[in-house]
Image (cartoon, rainbow, N blue to C red; front, side, top):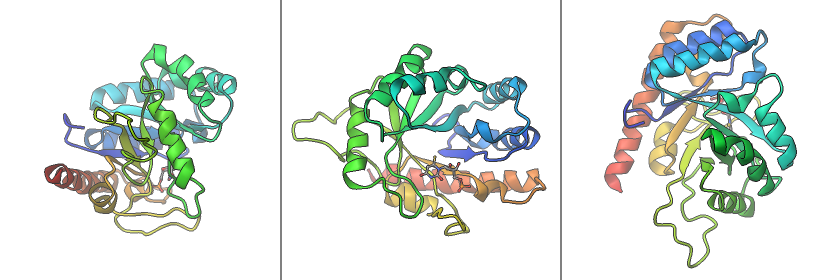
Length: 251
Ligand code: S5P
């Protein structure tokens, strides 16, 4: 983030490999992180991963596969390491729901720690009516604190620092990343329950670190317009980074 002066992560939720790679090559210079849903690519083969890894080196970004694991430890270890996608072999970061309890982290860590991967826990979701509130969020944060060798942060809508802390907990050196999806400068939501807030709201007012932006950058049209994608990536990058600099200067 510091090297490239950006806290923008682009979520590349498109179904054709050609569009997927074209968007990544276009936004690459402006992001710290590319977020993928590899299982929505219709013409997937292993060359997509080779190319993604080349782009990660070319543009200096990390790869975050948004797999949202949600099963028992043994199953998630298999889903993370094996199958068609072999996620652990290429994704620097992946994420998991807290719903199965600490065993999901144990299962994923058995694969991810030896590969020096990082895990993000979903502590709060952006969708309307999400059940990730109150004690659920607190327990997700406690699960992270118990595995700081592997859990590097949260998907959340607010800073999580003091949430779920008990008296006597030493939080002084705690520095979890907070990645916020549901970010848009133009729309307030979509027709399927997504809710958007501005970079200023999520980063400055709510203390999140990284903004995750999908359709706000590449729109919904079938015709990819890389000029407009580049323009939007620059726009979100400066909105996100300005809000971050303001927050850091206040703290
Ligand atoms: O709570 C969440 C968690 C995630 S990871 N809400 C989300 O929207 N996401 C993901 O962020 C979602 O799966 C999608 O890939 C992205 C948001 O996309 P956008 O097009 O709405 O910006």
